[in-house]
Image 1 (cartoon, one colour):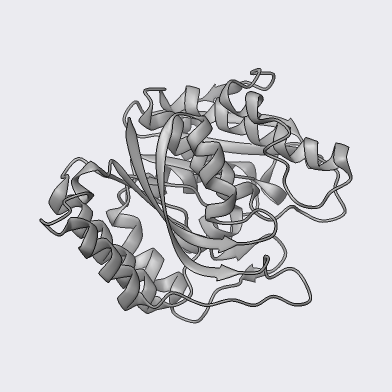
Image 2 (cartoon, rainbow, N blue to C red):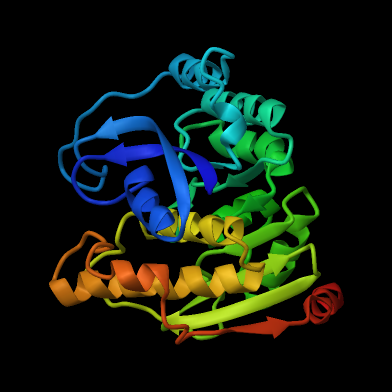
Length: 301
């Protein structure tokens, strides 16, 4: 059994952060150790929300206690997943935790979900967070899963075409992560009315492009990206290849979002399609691309 320490937000109502990731990851066959950075009544999209924030000191203390010889639990952790971070100092705290885990298990994987941007809104995190993620965290990660805005921030230049997104994905892998998944291509998609995603596996040098339907909801559901990242990691830890994990995650999350539309809900509906999360029909398959073709096109511009 693989174990994942996931450090994200938590909501009582709805699905976001750890609440969105934990159950689907468990369905995919891994044990999940949620460490909540906040505990809010709901996501921040609602007019009112409340709840405590976990201090950096407490986050570190919790992990150090798990490593204490009197309990000696931390060596069981196979992967660390980090999501939304509220301050530049919290980036440092997460990296200290990753170091502590790797002291116990040098083979532990770190998945960085660099939550800091949203299509049409640009950077949405506190000052200093984006820079700290770009300059400190990316090089320490084995896997990273940005959306298009986050990819643009990490790459450091505007992305306006499919070729731009492809090249930025491949180049991001050169900074440290061996696997890069771009969750949603938005304006850089080949088909604007579809949901398109990229995956680059630097271990094999292979690049994949997946297209699936874009579910028409009144507003984008919170937590879909958190769930997508979690399922990808769980599939990788349970022995799937990067391509298999990518296809599994994208098809599973599509069904969860579609279930929300079918139920007339704005929140994700993972319980309704729990069996499909475990073994989704692979209706939407990835197509392999040649990254060298796009690199050559970029140089010619």
